[in-house]
Amino acid sequence: MFSYRHAFHAGNHADVLKHTVLISILQYLTQKDTALTVLDTHAGAGLYRLDSEFSETSGEAVDGVQRLFDAKDLAPALQEYVDLIQSFNSGSSHKVYPGSPFIAQHVMQGRDRDRLKLFELHPTDTRTLKANIAQLDAGRQIAVLQEDGFEALKKFLPPPSKRALVLCDPSYELKSDYARMLDMVDDSLKRFPTGVYAVWYPIIPRPEAHDLPRRLKTMAVKAGKSWLHASLTVKSSKLSGPAMGEKRPGLPASGMFVINPPFTLKGDMQKALPQMAELLAQDRNATHALESGGG
Ligand code: SAM
Image (cartoon, rainbow, N blue to C red; front, side, top):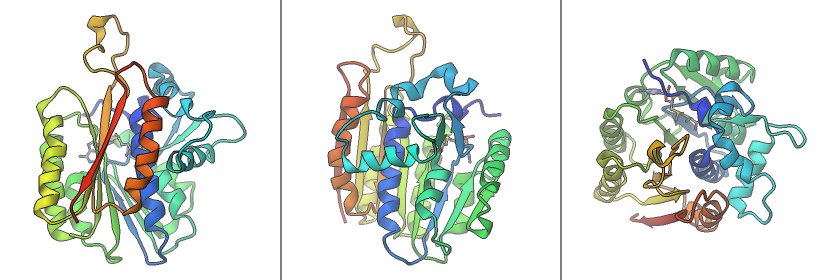
């Protein structure tokens, strides 16, 4: 079936961007007591070991989260991210990396009316996710569903709480994921126009990847919704690749497109993104971009 396993990439620069945005959104949404539903359409295994066989094979966290642990004077949103990851580790050890399900659960702690729905299709990752979540003893607050997240989301929109964040973070292993993402957001905006939709995507030399943020922006504007688009580049895509003698080409850049972002997200990212680009740079092409509009 699928060959993508997030364990190989946990804590890399894309996770730093994605999870910093996720935490910033969640912190805003949990300021109100009103119940919140978080739907994570592509949840992964939930927890990762940075010293495992998987992560050591690629070592991507070394050039990601691990560069931030000793950094000084971090922007508030980036510091919140580092502190949250650190809270899963004891002392100065950095062995555990929480994925989006555990990050969300961490921010939602003590909010019994909130709900977290986790969709994961890979049988092994679903098993691991279920076992990891079982340790939390979270009762009805968290549900793990081995279902196609693109499709299953429909059943949960609009949520009873009428407040929801949808995180959509596919591996884009299948080219069809790009079109499915667009269909899913289009459909979701009709079912539940006031939801917050956070979409991660890779910036790679593929037409569908370039088209995705452009199309999401058109969709948001057409629906009269506000949007924010943050991207982080850590190296040139041209220089990477086995042909250039690089052992592990790796992802050069990625973006987060958010529809109906909290108004605080822009300020958070204006401060955090330049630091991410500086601290996670792998060559002189490292850069960032932030644009927003609508509403
Ligand atoms: N969101 C996770 C995080 O931030 O920790 C990482 C998710 S990973 C990038 C993508 C996951 O989606 C993989 O675990 C993969 O098995 C799963 N997946 C692939 N296609 C899926 C689908 N149609 N529905 C649900 N999960 C899917």
